[in-house]
Image (cartoon, rainbow, N blue to C red; front, side, top):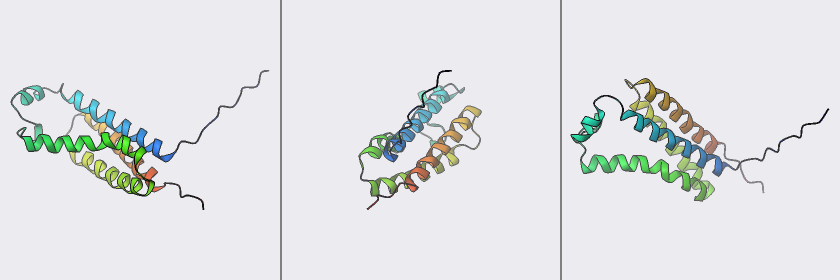
Length: 139
């Protein structure tokens, strides 16, 4: 009988875990918004310059929405680049913030959006958890 070799399990640094979580979160945001385009009436509203519950697609609304969605995209890189102390707190604060954004936006949504919303909340809270549990340097 041949012995199976044990696979190496290399510990993943917290910064890589956080970048991976932000990346997963961004993919869920993108797919959730993309699938939302298939809901009846959404494309017609877009053509009329409406952004659902946000109202008219003004420059201010579009800028605010752009900022809201650019931050998680930037956090993919910033989780790798920021110094540990600031990185930890930025990830905790933003992770909580984006979990709350999803909780507020989910009521009354279609099932696919609720599905993505639950995943996005879990990912956001995993970001908070990993940042909170950031290992301390041994002196």
